[in-house]
Image (tube, rainbow, N blue to C red; front, side, top):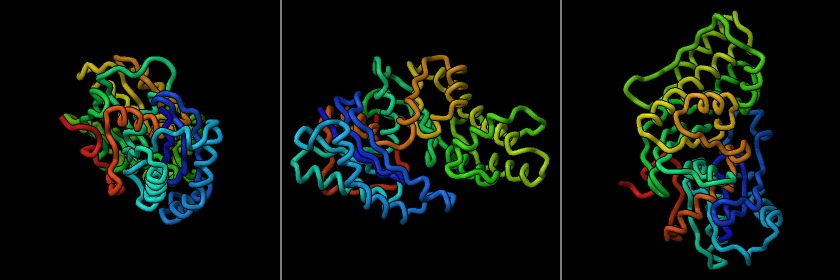
Length: 332
């Protein structure tokens, strides 16, 4: 089954052709990072207007890169939410209209579920269940137990800033460009241990996260003027990674998970990958960096397994913007 997938939840216009949920025949991403960099973050109205300009050409490029035409497409999928309303409307509406016109099955996919399914685009055996999924991105930080296709239980998440959001905000405090994650990682590579000690919010008795206090501590460190940017970046990254890796590994051990699946843009962080792999009691699966950040191939992978379960999205369905795991999968 060849699925044409579309992703426009934030500031990337993406399209892909995915075969049988495992093979990305093409994956095209038109980034808006340079457009929003001067604002220090994504401007929703600017993002949605750029999506309108690029969605058609990006879909055509994805088909061409896959070496196929619409006649060879068996279904269409698009991100339904969560995300920016204006951005979601462009991709979801385009995908639904295309499927309707071609009389093809259509499936709206939860963006967070898509991130998890990036792990199915890795060569080799499929992930084993039950899998503990750590979804870490600019807007989301969630620990989710996946017992099977369409079966999820959210066990913890951030109470304030998402991990990626914290990276972006701290980068701004340090005078580093947007997006913050890669720039903090580069600065941290030039830093190391010092007398600076930033807090870890362990929140005993829960598997939730909190990064707002850490962000405030960085602000005080910057104002103190005693430490260099690489030193602060190193300690900040270590604080985030310590909590993410520590809680994920402990929960995997308690649940006797078969695997840990990393997902989301922050999963591209080399230090996080390294630390979770070293602490985990079970195998850790991580997509390549280009499938960690927003892309449409992950949406196509998730859609394949939904379609295999007989699911379809009604034509009257609309987008949703909130992080709502009750809208993902069959609850049990």
